Image (spheres, rainbow, N blue to C red):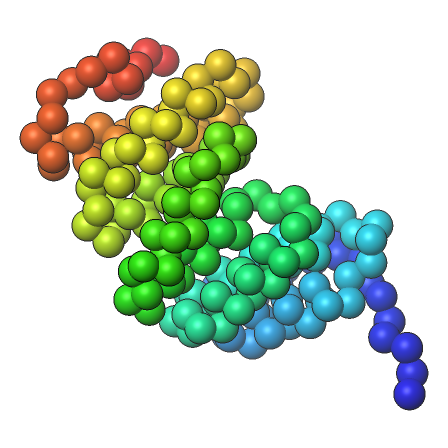
Length: 190
């Protein structure tokens, strides 16, 4: 039996695969390819094994294969490598799609205890909770994310994410009938 060949994955490789999925609609096929790559990626790869599992999970979700998405996210969680969005947040979103409400909120509860989350994770969780009509939860996650990252607005990327979170929070607060507060006032600054 031959040894499994390790591979190196670049951001350009990942972009090509994801673009193919969008263009062709073959999200399940691309998800399977991403998982295969994750199983073979070498330690010097530009894209981590955990991030490849996350990207596979996202493609499974687009294909509406939420069980496969959850499995891919769990592989990313088990791997423990760096990812753009915490795989536990992504897993919670897929679990909500499966009506696994208790399991989803258990994942989110674990995340809430860790105040060292990246801004993309806060954006994702707030979006997912808003989409599933948990407006109070969406507002809470958006508020915590904004407050945790207000001092890191140096890069345009971070500023764009903060603006996105501020706008989402404002819409959610409006839907909840809440008045403007100090964070809502930041929407006027540019």
